[in-house]
Image (cartoon, rainbow, N blue to C red; front, top):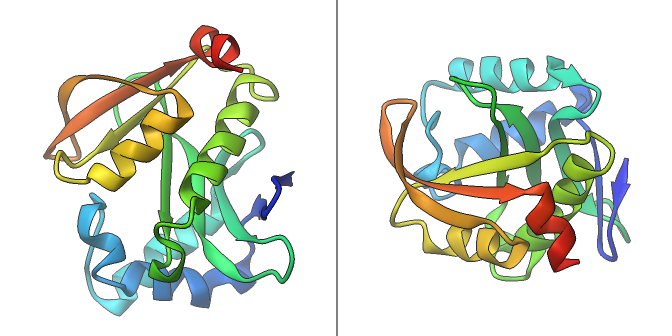
Length: 169
């Protein structure tokens, strides 16, 4: 479990499935997600895969309010589909957008990536028009390094090295 001033990040459990299905069924939340859409059965199957993915330092984390346990969304450190890079990924319910929750969760996972997981770098990708997510990555310390292909989409690519992370702390 990871904790910040306002948040608790914990590994996913089967009992999280209804909240995760609702999150992934929100077309506004999924607008900039590469695996968006699908039937309710397809969404439920992806959620079950996400819950089953538990690789100690890597995988998905449920993000909830520390004070009351309110579900805010998910964030993770995931293997990129190609290559050896680890991606920082996240998505949150609309009710917490603009409140710094994404930045706080991303900072906690970056700390985890470079201390506990001992990674040397983490990457992130966003749709070019997803400027709120790009602002989060900038606040965490990621550097934009061009465009790339990701799951058949053209996306902006960002990198954060352990060296840069430590220098900014």
